[in-house]
Image 1 (tube, rainbow, N blue to C red):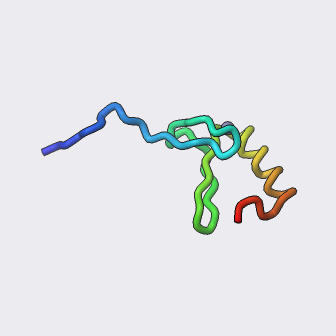
Image 2: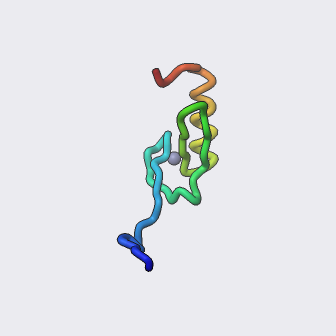
Amino acid sequence: MTDKKHPEETDTVSCEVCLKEVPASEARIEEASDYVRHFCGMECYNKWRHLAEKDSDPVP
Ligand SMILES: [Zn+2]
């Protein structure tokens, strides 16, 4: 027996940089020790990497 409550629902994530929602399957994922960041593409990923290098501890 199948019980699909939301057959149209797509698993989306928010880009860490521009906050745009993108499908999880298309998102660029960066796994930290206990936190996963998502990016809409390499452009935002590179942007975040650049910022992260300048400020090594952006999140408490
Ligand atoms: Zn983005």
